[in-house]
Image (cartoon, rainbow, N blue to C red; front, side, top):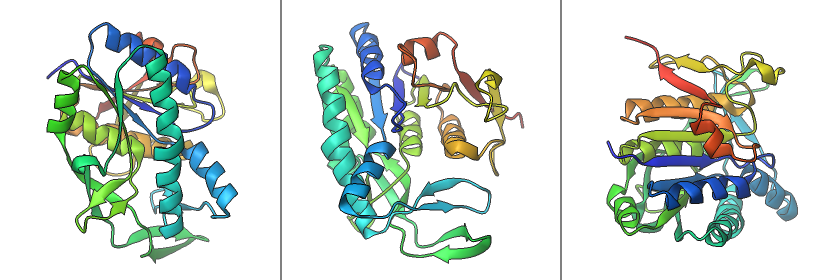
Length: 273
């Protein structure tokens, strides 16, 4: 296992992306290979409003919420991530003196996914099957491309979409993309930064941050509210794929990466067999 750090910068407006970039740049200058993965929920929602595209969510039977991605929403996702969020992060990293390159999962087949044919979701309390959602489950990562960039001293900045088996784009969750990347490169640490202190025992009490959250190897995660469910699923996938450790931490701090690595976080562990 190489001492690679994979950081996922949450896309909510509360996350301090400039502070994330400053910490990531400091780690890179210290000689540590870093991959920065990002979403952009706030930018996606803001652009969707400007373009008149409704933002909708799909809630699975176990309570995990994901973005509903029809054809128009997929276009908004690509425009927001590649056209707004990524250039902003690249500019921040350049200002910190770090060489970085922006990639989506479409570049050189960086993220390969299987298109989801149907989704089971809860709508109005009823279970329905949604068939027009353009999203996919990641099945492959171009690890060679990432290793080449890291060996050249370049920091990859990665986001969805992924490329499906038909060669077309599909949306994929950025937390799970970060988990797939961390597993593929055998990262020592995956850090998921969000708009909370970590995993909370009580979602209404930020003082209830759990130092450790144990999750089952299969089945629903112990917490599904506030977007934490998908993060815990991503954490499980990363750990099962061989990532050394997974941390969930507050992206609103002045030094979010540094503080998380120093212990201001929730560490996610798999339940014992």
